[in-house]
Image 1 (cartoon, rainbow, N blue to C red):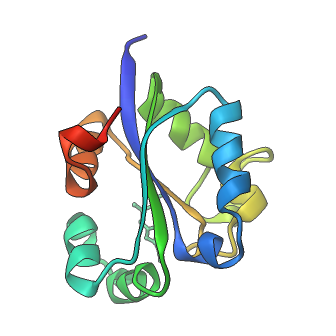
Image 2: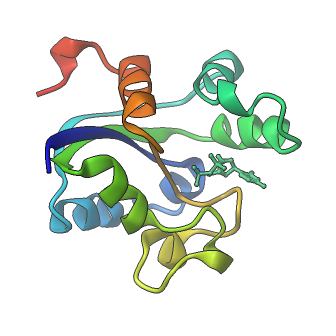
Length: 139
Ligand code: UDP
């Protein structure tokens, strides 16, 4: 297993319910090292650029509106096998389908307001990390 980095986002539904501290604690308790972090509020253009691969999906417009609705916390997490292990920790997209013990099962409201984002591949992790952070901001 190689050391990897992945991009985590604590989404608007979670920042608005003051779950940031609790979620960050869970990430650290599960072996993820926070090597970069910031709070940002996305504008429409930034959110669309981030989710460009979903632009043709029927849920795209509502996803963009949701992601711009309040500040988010973006972080780079480092761990062996980080990309896959973080996806396992957060669980399925819709909390109805998420396994017991996953963060989305515990915190998500529904299949859109699902509290957390995580990169789904090593290639996307590299793109997503560079979308939010300069090399000098990653420790
Ligand atoms: N989403 C949505 N409606 C759907 C599917 C997804 O609003 O029917 C939102 C949800 O917030 C999800 C994001 O779009 O996290 C990206 O979708 P994806 O299928 O990539 O899920 P993820 O990788 O986040 O689990």
